[in-house]
Image 1 (tube, helix red, strand yellow):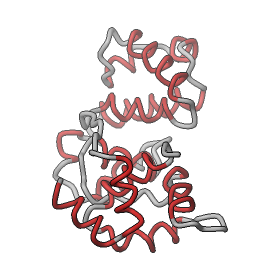
Image 2 (tube, rainbow, N blue to C red):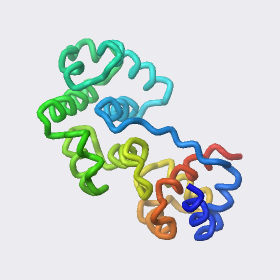
Image 3 (cartoon, rainbow, N blue to C red):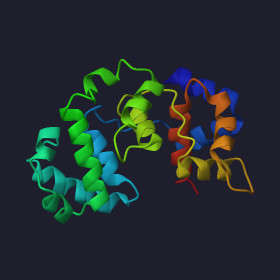
Image 4 (spheres, rainbow, N blue to C red):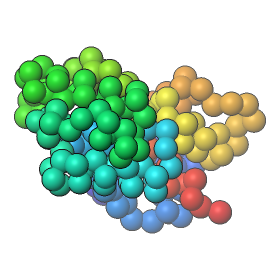
Length: 197
């Protein structure tokens, strides 16, 4: 980690300042399993508190272990009553079908390149590039992922680099060139920078 931080501090004075102000890195990782992707789908476009409540209800329906079989044994009505939208129920059931059929083999994902993981995951309804990026960073622990489409990252770049206009994925990509091969670490610090005064 020291090597990554030294690189980021050296290559980008703005990021160096953020790293100093945020302090030590504390990334919360998850396991690269089915449940982690279900969690990502549940959390899409919801506040953390509401999403966690719904996720816990889904886990309860699955007797504490969210697996493809457990999801397939829960009815659409039960998932809806847990608080999931019709669309998210469809996404989670599609994910369960892919996993149960062996089309999505979580044990093999770690052997794939980042682009291959993205291509594999985005075959499932409801899993876009953003969700695949989060899975790469926080489940597979890949060090060089830059979620250029993430609104938080765009806002952090706008704020940190004093941009007047809206920051686009291209702007993030341009700034991110210097951060390679540690874009995931840079991204984590950018997210945390939004919490600074």
